[in-house]
Image (cartoon, rainbow, N blue to C red; front, side, top):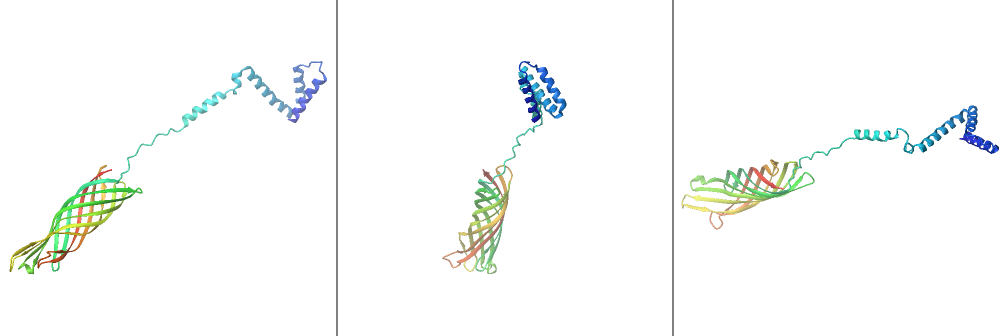
Length: 286
């Protein structure tokens, strides 16, 4: 740039020294050429200057071309098209099946097998029977996997056992349970449509002991009492359809001593224990 300034200054001095000569542009260019021959660096800078002057003149003569250098339009459009063709096309991910939820109210039925044992003052009664009944409850699922709820059920049965009085020469005693049920909490862990749970709560049973005396004075005594106790167990429940579930459950019911035949000479206390295994169906309203 220093040399360029020198050159320009030289041209200006020449013009000032010979104002009347009206030197032509041709003479000025010839003098520049002469100076360039003596200095290669100045020649290079002047070549750049000439190129810029030519571009400015070309832009004045053709305004549309001056907006952008030749080939710039194709450069602007071609990369855009290439970018569009190379850009990845994002598609919406398909909607997956909704996760199973255990939250809701349910009703259903069940059936199973019961094994019990009643113990009186001097007698023990082994009991076996099938049973069937209904249940209803409510679940609430939280923290993705945990389920809490309450269930109440009632079962009808013919769970009974008999024992002889003094070898059977005097009579027999029968201890029968007509119905039992419970009101329990349920807490479990779910993997989608599979629920493992424990359950515990209060229980009740309708007991019906009967004494038949054959000698020396034949008589028959019958009593009905409601026994109360607790229930505990656990099970697994599996979703078969969006609303229908199938469950398998073990439940143990324990009833403390209850006094029977009060006001008679046969009065006494007995306790009752029942082990149950059941399967059931529930209709869950989400």
